[in-house]
Length: 146
Image (cartoon, rainbow, N blue to C red; front, side):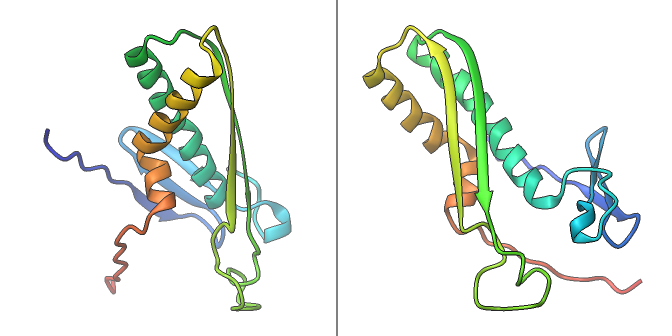
């Protein structure tokens, strides 16, 4: 199968807000007031959690279908903890990103616990977003002076 390429473009609207174009969609990213923003959108680290929830949802349904599991209900709760000190330039003692991300998938199904444990392993292994979060991904950031 061919590799798929995804891309976004972003234009700064203020010191904390950016409008991101993804295909035909505009996503607004902003900070809450306590971090200097106007709360006009979720912040970047909330979008990371949202991306994980979206990916887990898709893969959970795909894997369930493949395994013959009927999902009557599915909801996902995700929490991440980070120290904003590095992001704010106040301390470099800890990493800037999440220290840990905890995911709880609530599922209503007639599948037994053993089957669900296998399903969860498949979901975690096949979700591209969880893969990107759990493993180093080469990242190259450059600039273009206008």
